[in-house]
Structures are given as structure tokens and as C-alpha cells.
Length: 70
Image (cartoon, rainbow, N blue to C red):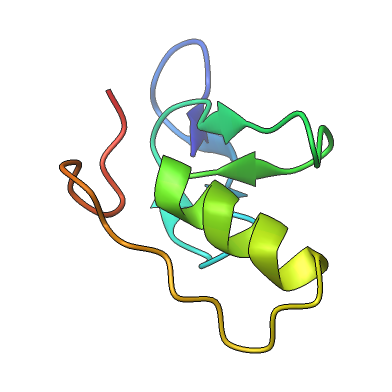
């Protein structure tokens, strides 16, 4: 979500290209899909696996919380 300069309204909504979660920051970019924005490394990995033809990607969550940036 991109707030206006004065903070009174939202200029545009930014959503994760994989899961659709509303982002309150710039999100994460991927080298594989440079025109897309993601909420987490997990969503980047899942989207990459799906693009490679994996029907049901099984990506472990690891130590980060899903949908947590920072």
C-alpha cells in the first residue's frame, strides 16, 4: 500500500504477486520475475517452482514467519 505524501489517503495498493497479501512496504523483488513484487522469500520460491512446472510445490517455511518482511 502506498500512502500519499501527506499520509491522508492511499495512492495505490501493492499486493504480493503470489498470494495477494496487501503490502505496507515496497515488498521483495525476484531476479526470476523482476516485474513482480512478493511479500516473503517463501512466496518467491513457491512462485518460481510453479513457473518451473511443479504442479504442487512443497516449500518448507524455514525460520522466517510467512508473510513477514524485514
